Every structure is written in structure tokens, then in C-alpha cells.
Image (tube, rainbow over all chains, first blue to last red; front, side, top):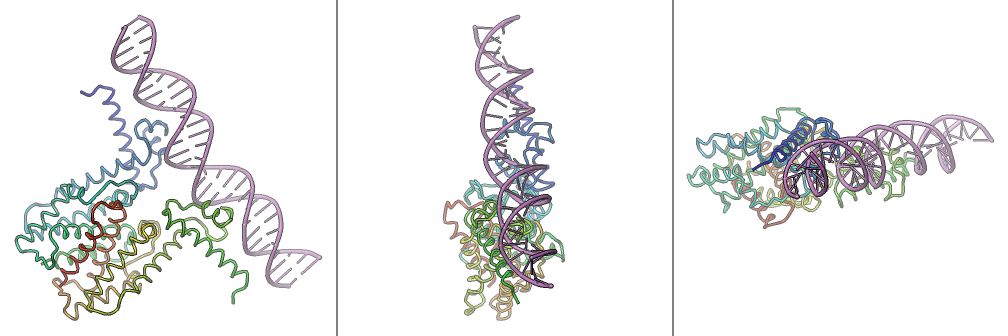
Length: 197
Length: 197
DNA sequence: ATCCACTACCGAACACTGTACGGTAACAGT
DNA sequence: ACTGTTACCGTACAGTGTTCGGTAGTGGAT
């Protein structure tokens, strides 16, 4: 049973996070300041510490939310078609998310401080599990030839790294659009997929 | 002709950069402060502005130096052997650099502010040119089958993205060593190489 | 209804940051 | 010997995250 007090507390907590998320998505995590958050929701900076122990704690929360949103987006990829088709769609969706929410994506993956992730943990994520499953399907049906001793686990991790690498390069070094960079990215990922045949 | 004055100036400039580089490599770019640099070389913080217009300018210089070092490292990869062998060695060397100089690597690739890079510019880099060349060799000799319409340009960019993605994931999400993560990375990259056959 | 503990919040302050400005020496060229 | 430039410093300012002391007001128990 949630008392009215707890409900109010949970609501303002959410308000803080929403304001913080807005700032991050609009101006990047480096523009996030306690005073800016407080100002937007008519609080004093010190008041925020009633809800979060530090600015870092707020960011951690936002990062978690970011992963939830990414996973949700990946859920919307079609479940039908051949394994290779699905794989290509998964890649497209992933990079589309990074490109559409650049500040959020950068915040999620630029953090070295306390990230209690192990690969085993990542593999529990439903979106990631789907990626592994897709490779397993492809290997089983013979769509994907296993040229090496590599199994679905290795290939999935390879695919994720590639999607991440493409996204990061796009958002950091190549954030100035000069040529048909997005076309290059799409072709680069397709090249990988094609080589699996 | 360099006057003694100019030589002195160039030397202190170098001293500043060396101190800054030390701080970054030891404690990360977030620990880099003008006062810390000044303290280490017995200057006042404001004195540094005689040599660099801002802290950002110093970081830009360090990033440039980082790319020089990375390129130098890549030069040391063997030039003999089959294309696939060389490719695997290039990948290993790249990721070895990132792992050995994590703070430097993170600083180089976490920056969104002013990065005047276009893909065309990257391709002028000798180390990157070597990567492209290796793919070209592999395609020509038939070592690498071109399953798609992808040429050496696409494949090289794909390979770079993969190496970068593996390195970044390793340094951010997976910086806590839990399992044989390095083995996983080596296998992941090899899986990619094998699929090229 | 009265008390009391506790929650929610604020204002001020501290230590830190990057940077601008004014002043002061030492230097270089005439 | 004069003079403009260079090199450097001390101070100060606006901004940051965070701590602390205090103050209302709420919620529950007597």
C-alpha cells in the first residue's frame, strides 16, 4: 500500500528525472546541472538531494531509462522474414535510435564510472537475447554459414560491437555531415551481413 | 630561422602538453584542470593562457597527439603474410592500443565538439590507408570473397567500426573484468575475419 | 486536541572549476 | 638608454556539485 506521502514523493522524483532527461536530450549531459534542473521545476538545488544522493545518481537513473527505451525500440522490429532480413532490420533500428537520440546514446555509453555490467548481464536483456536468437536461427537454417568455430554468442557480440562502433563514430568524429555518411553506414552494416552468407 | 625566444616558447609549450598528457593518461581527461597542469610545471594557471587560448585547445592538441601515436603503433604491424593474417594483426594491435592507453583512447573518441573530420580526411591517414589496402589485396587475391557489392572502402570502414566498437564497449560498459572478456573480443574480431573467407 | 518525530525544502556557504583583467618585471630592437 | 613587446602572476568573477543549519508543515500516537 502506498501512502499519499509516498505517492507524492514518487511523483516529484519522476518530475526531477523528466526535467533532467529533457536537458540531456536537448543539450547533452555536459549541460546538465543541479541548478538547471532545480530552476526548471521551481526547486532549490539543495532540495534535489532529498531525492538523489548526487548528480551522478541522477545520471545513472537516466542511463537506465535510456537502455529501457532502446530495448523497447528494438522490440518493434519485425519478427517475420528470414534471419538475415531480421538481422539487417535490427541493425538499422539500433543505429536509427542512436542517430535520433544522439545525446542520450552518448550519455549511455560514455560512462566509465560504476557500470556494473558483465557480458552475462547484457545477455539477459531481452533485446540482446533476440539478437543472439536471430543468429542461432540463421546458423540452424544454414542462412548463415559458420566459417569459423564462432557460434551465435560470438557473432551476436560482434554484430553489437559493429552497430555500436558505427553509431559512435557517426556521433563523435563524423557528426558533421559532409558526404552521404548515412548511406556509408548502411552499406557498411550490410557488407557485414552479406559476408555471413 | 628560430630565435632563442621562439625556441624557449616552443619548449615550454611542449612542457605544458607533456604535463597535461600525463594527467590524462593517469587519471582521465575529466581530471585535467588548468590548476593541476600549472601546479605540476610551477606556473600560475593564468600563465598557461599565454600558450593556449583555452583548456579545450590543449585537449585538441592532446587528441591530435593521440592519433599520431595510434598511427605509429599501427605502422609496427607486420607487412608480410597473407591479407587475412595482416588484417587480424591490425585488429589486434588497434585494440591493444585502446586497452593499453584507455584514458587516451576515450578522450580521443568521446569528443563531439569541433572535430573537423570527414571520412575523406580519415582515409588520408596512412594507417587507415593501410587497412583499405589490405582489404584490396585480399579481394584481389581472392582470399576475401566479395559476397556483396561492397568494395575495400566499405569493408575497411566496417572493420574500423568493429574495432572501435569492441574497444569502446570494453572500456566503458565492460571495464570491470568479470570473465574472459579479452578472449571474447579476440574471438569476436576473428569471427569477423573468418566470415570474410 | 496536543504533542513529537520526521519529512520536505531552502539559503548560505565551501571548495572547486575555467577564464578575464591589470599589473609587473624582463627582454629585444632601435 | 629608451621603448614596445613578451612572459608571467595575483586577483577576481561566474559557474559548478555538495554540505549544513534551520524552518516550516505533515502524519501518527497519545
